[in-house]
Image (cartoon, rainbow, N blue to C red; front, side, top):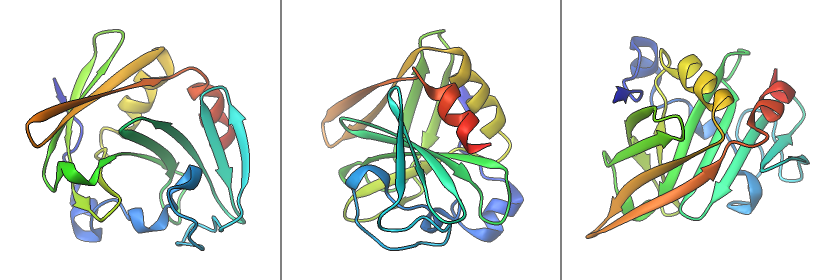
Length: 169
C-alpha cells in the first residue's frame, strides 16, 4: 500500500495543502471566492462523471459520490496540480482512508483537517503525480473510511477523469 498523505517539507511549512483556496464545487457551499478566483457563480462543464468548475483565474475538477468528494486543482500561484479527498465530517481528524483502484493499486491517506461539513485528506506533494497518473489509467475506484463503528465504502468513477484533467492543464 502506498502512503500518499505524507506532506512535503514545503507543505508542512505552508499548512495542509492550502485547501482554503478551493471552493466546494457542486453545491456543498455557495461561498464566494476563496483564493483561486473561483466565484460563487462559476462556469461548469460536465465531463462524463467529473465536473470542471472555472472562475476568473482557475479551474478545478470535481467528482462527488455518496460519502466522498474528489477535487483536483492547481496549487495557489502555480500550475502544479494537487488532489484532495473529502469525506464525512464524522470521520474526524487523523482518520485513515483506504483508496483502491480497479487495477489493484492501493494507497492510504489520513484526514488532515475537518469542519462541520467534511474532513479532508490531501495527497502529498511528492505523490500527486503518481496518483493522477494512476487515476488516468483506471476506470473506477473506491475509498473506505470509518465513521464510528461503521465502515463507509464510497465508489467513484474515473470515466472522464483524463478529459477533465486536460481541461485544467
